[in-house]
Amino acid sequence: MPFKSLSQPRQRLADQVYAQIMQAIRDGSITSDQPIVQEKLADQFEISRTPVREALFRMEQEGILTVTGRGSFRIRQLDMKEVSEMYGARCAIEGYAARLLAETNDAATNQRLRQAITDAEDLSDNTVEAYFQANMAVHRAFVKEANNRFLLELFDNIWNRGSSFTMFASIKSGELVKSLGDHMALVDAIETGDGSTAAETMISHIKDGRDLQVQAGR
Amino acid sequence: MPFKSLSQPRQRLADQVYAQIMQAIRDGSITSDQPIVQEKLADQFEISRTPVREALFRMEQEGILTVTGRGSFRIRQLDMKEVSEMYGARCAIEGYAARLLAETNDAATNQRLRQAITDAEDLSDNTVEAYFQANMAVHRAFVKEANNRFLLELFDNIWNRGSSFTMFASIKSGELVKSLGDHMALVDAIETGDGSTAAETMISHIKDGRDLQVQAGR
DNA sequence: TCCATGTTTTCTGGATACAGTATACATCAA
DNA sequence: TTGATGTATACTGTATCCAGAAAACATGGA
Image (cartoon, rainbow over all chains, first blue to last red; front, side, top):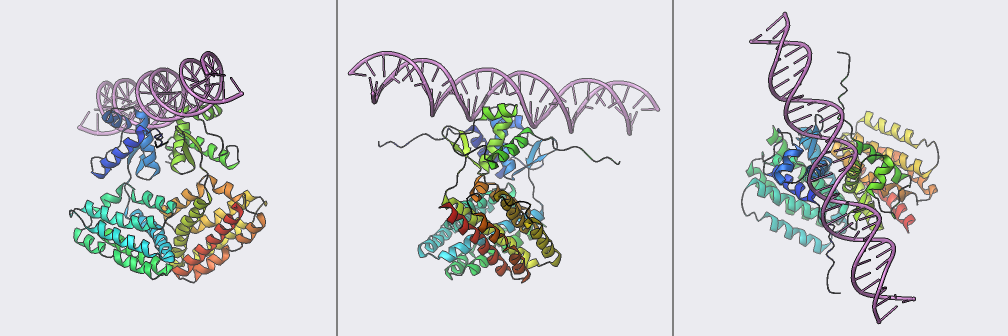
């Protein structure tokens, strides 16, 4: 039987809605000051409220939206304390990923990491969005190579929080470029083979990012 | 105005359903070999399918359920590799929490931790369930005292995975008691004030748990 | 008896209908 | 004009309905 199964789990409308709303949040057509109305969205997509609701609930659970008043959603706006905690969560995940990588210290893996960094940092344009994507791609590569799907899941969970991109928008681009440069040093730390060293290097790299963020946020 | 606001966010049926299904999973009345049928559940709860659907979707997203066939849910069964990865994720979260605690090294906090351990380990009965709860309570206390809501959220996310309890059921209770005893040592490690030491102690404690689990799982 | 085909049943995703509540708005008295 | 009260509107949660697809079952020919 040369055919591969095409029984995809019957794609749900809610998934598409989810993606579209996400996009709308990213490009700023939905802002955090207007409440999100199920019926309005349903009308725009020309579908019923049911799948829209489903997508919204999902986003609430992921911390992208927050429920206000009697049940309507808004984009969840993080205050500085929460932003800072978010970086903390990143330290936990990515720091441990670095630890695992160091403990394995596999040459081929490290090589792939270097390659990923080179690829990602070859920015096609200098927008903040491009920087954001590049930075995320690099960091995601580390977690991915650590080979633990839970870790990767948690990573995505954190990075998808609605404001994570808009937050970056406030950082001056000069600083961004500088911060991009540090990634190779992370691989170096991994290559020491010492878990704690790698973890600490990663953590302090992330904290640098946090400081940039905090400065910009004031 | 001596009245306190009673505007609670209008509690949703789906939440109750969620809790009930969760309970049913824990006490084994829903097992992983039977598919979960929305209409059946709705009938049992004597409500419509809508809130049931909502609860199920939520559980799917949390990784408690998995979608099979054309869209029906089952309890997600983790294989040994995934179980092991789950412990890895715990190392990341809880290890970093320990690091934070050590860096702060606040006497009052440490005292509260010791108290929490004493409280939790005073098992009223010797069932595996009781052990599981006690162990979770202790570990949760560490993360909670680290004072980072994201970390706590991720912690809950991991520990709520459907099978996390049923997994434990296979460990011999003798081993469990032994493993409970190690918790005070974690506070000791925190009191060294050295982040790496604390993190590593926590990680190796969790890995001990993992090894127990893996042995039992074979 | 066993396989292939057609038919019924089951069950999901999505649309629509309905009820309840908070908000917005209008109306009226001081 | 302003504040209190009644009314309309907006929007949510829940119930019900409908169409489509998989799965189970039955039926008939070799």
